[in-house]
Amino acid sequence: MFKLLYKNNKFLYLNAYLIIKLDIKMKLTITFLGTGTSQGIPVINSSHPVCLSEDKKDKRLRSSILVEWEGYTYLIDCGPDFRYQMLRAGVKKLDGILFTHEHSDHVAGLDDIRSFVFKQGAMPIYAPKRVLDDLISRFSYIFNDKNKYPGAPSVISTILDEEPFDLKGMTVNPIISEHGKIPVYGFRFGDFAYLTDVKTIPEKEINKLFGLKVLVINALRKEAHHSHLTLDESIEIIKELKPKRAYITHISNRLGFHAEVEKTLPKNVFLAYDELVLEI
Image (cartoon, rainbow, N blue to C red; front, top):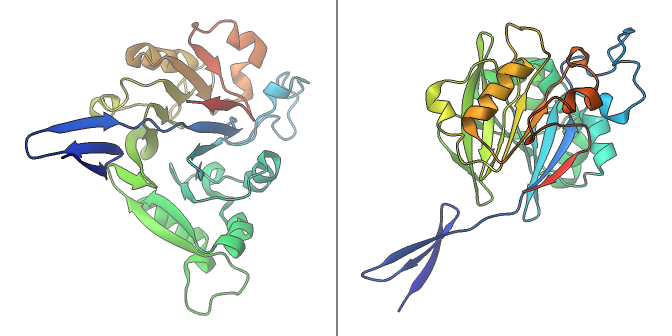
């Protein structure tokens, strides 16, 4: 007689002599809340042609995505545009936030989780210790349980390391790359991976990224940059990893007009844009 168990995102049929593993493919929905770099597009007080574009795809909030499966909704990065992004996307429930690193364009919206916290309770957040320490310094009133201001949001913190971790039955694998002089976390969810603010990826982390259906990776501009991939550098990584599709994010106005740049890309590579939704 067979016994059905569920472990590590797989069903296991067990008897005394046989183990059969069946991968359970969870359908993912990815929503690009923002695809711009730290200043967004248009840049304040800029007369750059891309900043003056009337094409909706050239208007980019700070980079962030929603990842959804089986009724769960997780956010990657909570930047200064978080409030508007939630309103624009009509998000009614948020199960947690994963942080890639501590720069302001990725964390500055944390106070605005209040609306979710007041309805749902303390917000689970996931970050490496360095990033969590930075959040505690910036938002001490959120993390201070003594004499807490009644209107302040509350969080439940989980410190991330290099090991895969479980989110509601989904195994998430951290991808640790280099963003200038600091480590930056990317995340792989099944056949999907999200990397932003990357400049170099160590070989052991590259090996975690083969066999993807969809890769999202940053490309700031065409010219060299000390802490971000250029478009050509990003395309070289995509060619090495061979995902079925790849999307470019964390884009500056200096990359060029969306419509023009897309014409130059390989057939399986696309520029992401705000409000783009992918089903994987």
